[in-house]
Amino acid sequence: MLNNHELRLLANKLSEKILSEESNGKCDINIYQFSEYLEYLYIHSDAEICNLKNEIWVILKADPIFIEHSDNAQINEFLNSIDWSSIIKTADIRLDFKSALENVEHGYDLSEALHYGFNDEDIHNLAVIHRDNPDLREKIEDLLEDCNFHTECNDFNEGNYNDYIPEEELEK
Image (tube, rainbow, N blue to C red):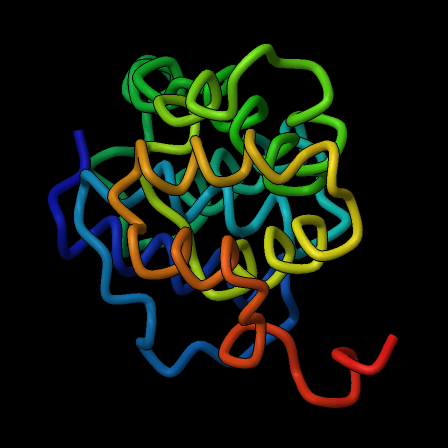
């Protein structure tokens, strides 16, 4: 298996290949964050999961930095250790919160799949959905409360979206 240093190198190489960004070592992740990073790549690129797997395979096979992990069995073991279905499920929720919320009975039904956390983009998207869809407000508030985003939940409940939606979008 890859150690944390090797995972950071792999994440940086994936950024350069998939997002076409010069990473300059900015992917400072550890083994526990690697799946979340793959989810980020899946959401913010046109890459399919099979492309991500293939890119990982190519990097591990071809890059001399990973020579000790370059045999097929080790690469397969590493790729099989990643919960790809969880990555896809979480990414699909984040890509379309509205549909995900419409398809659950309670907002908190999504909490575990989201690892009880949100990034700024998620909060922005939830704020817009909360503002524009009164029928989903209770589910969004349930989800925020269950994930310990109490301040955001309270703000949304009071119709205070100023901190979450840019001013030019608030006028819509």
